[in-house]
Length: 139
Ligand SMILES: Cc1cc2nc3c(=O)[nH]c(=O)nc-3n(C[C@H](O)[C@H](O)[C@H](O)COP(=O)(O)O)c2cc1C
Image 1 (cartoon, rainbow, N blue to C red):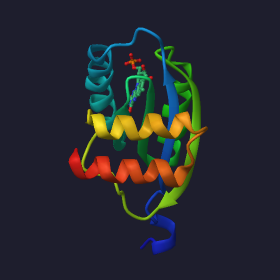
Image 2: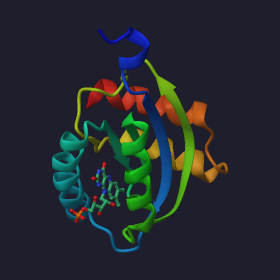
Image 3: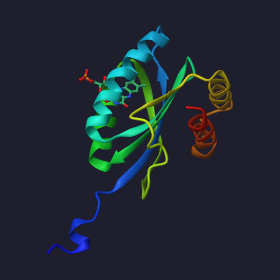
């Protein structure tokens, strides 16, 4: 019989990053990114939410630490965005964005709120979180 400690669930993590969309990226491009992301995330048991303001991305990723390491490595090499900056990364007991293999928010209000944060400097995690929580209720 294996003890509980030996078969503890793998650690889940919550990660949020910001990035700058490459010039010329269209919403059609973003939708195609999303289509394949959802298939791959389902396979990796990654969930989350993507918000695109037309200029910046903010993405929540939740999953096992190793999967997030891999995915962030891939994302950093993706030339469809740049200046990827991890805002927050920490272990979680339960997913807060578990309903989507990758949800997509196209709300103008959320996009505006995100751009206003960038205009004021680099957004901090608390401010971005507030936008994401609101977006999640709409997604
Ligand atoms: C803003 C943005 C968000 C992305 N999100 C994901 C994601 O959640 N999961 C994923 O697998 N790929 C995501 N991608 C795509 C990856 O960077 C990469 O292109 C893809 O995983 C490679 O898949 P392929 O090797 O099957 O073409 C994202 C790309 C961008 C630009």
